[in-house]
Length: 620
Image (cartoon, rainbow, N blue to C red):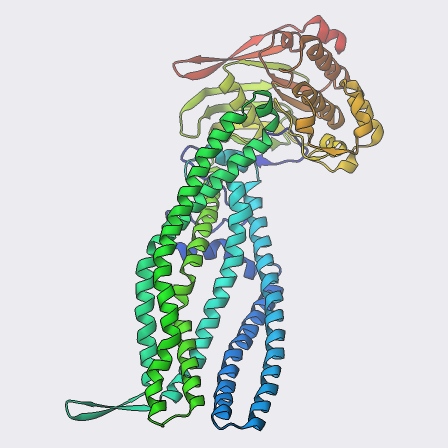
């Protein structure tokens, strides 16, 4: 949990045990995945809002343009089909004039095709990126809101590696959905166009059955439909295992990416512990899963390719073999034969969309499921927080209160196990309270006050219009300029040079003054004690009214700890201080002490009243 400053009124809450997560901005009428009627409706509920948001006019204009350009793309094979008939007729008749005319016409078709293809590409990619941008912003808003990114880690369910789901799976969801939607629309329009052509070219076939002559119009169309139906059915049966194989592989890939990211984030600690060998072993195990996923997908693809390879070759030869008897009989010209073969191929190709796209559909659906699982988990968590007033710890700001008040506050684990029994407590402005005892309970209490640990019950009330500052054990240092680090989460421009220099010098980091506008990985460049000193520099710049410290001096030696605590008392004499810590040196700087004692599996609160120490009095 990063340190943070809160200057506004608000209400923060949490959820009880069963694990779920928050929806975010528009979860009002959404339901969890268990109650949702199906994949399609879940997907449309999540992603369909892109077509009905603030930019809906532009989005619909791009969508209509994409459909119109797709119709333009369909017209290309139709034109080629008509051109092919005339070309082969010209060749059969050995007509040079008609042949040269066909060369000129194909040049015009090429120019037309270039215009259509380029415009289509630009419109499609703009729509894809717009949808991805909208969906990413929505999930980020839901995830990075009121501590949900922290709380979701404690929830059961299939929502691990949210970073990979947001960065990679949303990309696949948006890009591939439009690709698949376009290809399906193209095939449907192609089917409509060439069904009519194939029907006309088929003529009427006369069949004698039991002495009766039957006329069968459009027989080639029925042959094409039967041929494609058989191929699609076989492909769907063979390709079904591919869906599960793709899903498993993406899960393995996500685990491997997450482990690599963890090593990058904790590179300094791993290096100090010489843990490279252990990490290599762990990564080798995870990559073994990637290999298994890859091999499983390869086996599934191999089975699919055995069929598709034979099917594709047969599809090229079959229509000519079917139409050739009519040409041999002299009832159709060479041009009509080739036109018929092309129309048959285009019809079968359009009907074969499931065969051609089954692997991509499997990959797309697996990514969509990963995004939906994250979103559904956030929905459930948010509903537990918002819809059950007494089922979580409420943290509110009040105009009527000038104290920090705990009213019947009980703290639980996410699974419902009690951590701290219900207690009442009041902290007055100017109090300096030390909280010690059970380590787990103290951390949970700290996070409950910060509004990011909602599991439990009761109400925590903070005064309105006061500045609150939370400093965890390891301050969060973004990869940015040092000025931005000091200002976080505010803008870097809010920290003037003189204030930054004074704060850094006061906490014992004068060497960093010259690097104020330098950008670096400060969490790796600085030692842990230096990072804790930098946290105090941030505190001096913020100058809050209420200060919450979580073991914020545990890496400092006793003289340095004494120096920083005395500095804080001198610079912020009227601030209220709540400190979680277990160092003996902290006692002298606090007038009240709370002890969290564990008995029978749960923790009770006991207050020990202390007289202010001379150090504190002199500092005040």
